[in-house]
Length: 126
Image (tube, rainbow, N blue to C red; front, side, top):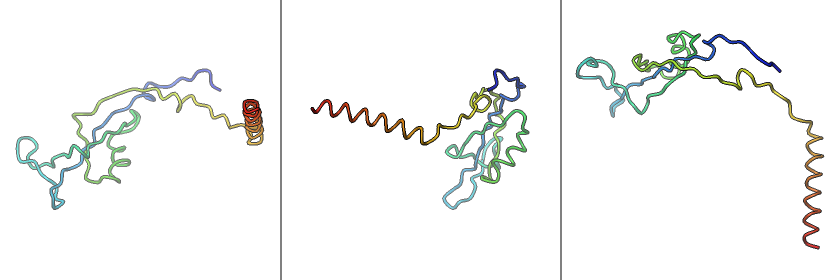
């Protein structure tokens, strides 16, 4: 089991990107904006909005193409909402799997506990 490990800061950092999807009218057509800087561009549907955490070591565009577009080909990134964050996922970096005890050992322990409970119940009813 490791006592300590050394990581680059980027191992814990990520970009949170906001993934937008277009609003559609009753016939399924994409609704386009009619005013201002959104004129002629798809209007985003807030109910379909999602976020993705992209590791700092990944290119955002490559991640988006690989992980998002296959599932939502009409999606785009609202780059104005992209933020940088950090977290230390202890389980991912420090967890060491310990296999469970043998089933025979667990069964024997359960039988012993069950026998003790039955003895105690019999003592109460006597």
